Length: 263
Image (cartoon, rainbow, N blue to C red):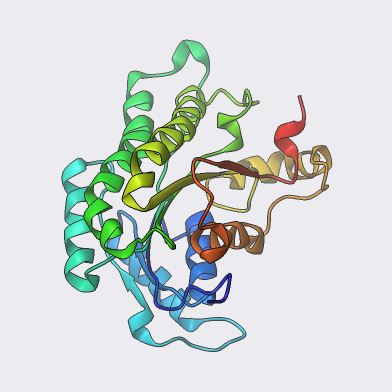
């Protein structure tokens, strides 16, 4: 078996229609996986599917390798429905990437209760409910030698105090990192690894305003002196989801050019 080959793997990527989720979906496809992307809007799902099928230097892909299933993953019933639909289509899922997320910024005195509900529902509760819903499909695909994989997308703002007043976002990502460790212990004996990546700044809709206002300063503060590129995120996802990462579980891996090392 090739260390980084995902041929024959079915992977589900939530929030897979843009930003970091799309970067991961494209990387898993390039490594040979069949990919299901999901997000709330049906038109965004179809647009991402078409973009992924168009391929890159390797040319267009076989249409059966990319599916798109819209779902509002802030709701537990929609998490269950997504697992049911994917299960009917595939029978087993080797990789679940919990990437769907939201952020909210406001001064302390103005930070609303709705900002906690929206962000925690999608960033923390959704990965838990999705992992539980997909667990039978993951167990069907995993083995002692090559477990199924859950990859949670956290943030360096869950590793350090953020510069912006994003109270619910940073708290949700820190909690997701610890939930990753808890589930790794729980699911390891069931042949499922659970890891998290903690991205720093990447070009995405969520980061667009920040990078436009302070992208040069952020890049200069990172020891590697740049922001993240799509291949940086794809590479760590391929590692965790392939045979190369089969003995890694409970890890939270910063993908930030060293930015989280700064005070």
